[in-house]
Length: 85
Image (cartoon, rainbow, N blue to C red; front, top):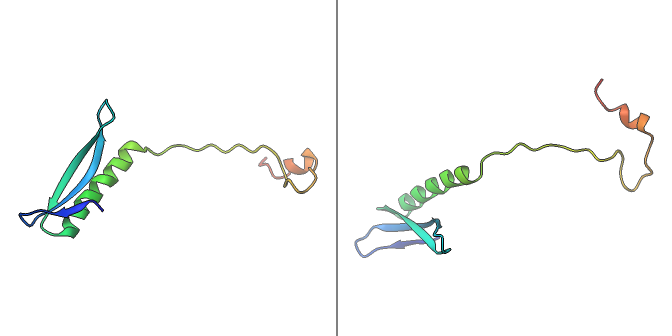
């Protein structure tokens, strides 16, 4: 955790906001009266950033063959019996 207690008694929780064009890290900070309060604020921002940077994706399914590699391949008629009509 990157949380520290400051001289004034507040807790500062830092997180990586992004990077500059040169590749340097840009930090953001959250403050709280307790360690848990600062950590909760930082976690809420991390959750927002995760959704923003990783939108849900659709996943397609491709079936390349029927059977297992250890068994000999059966006929296409046998494989076609599992397909919906």
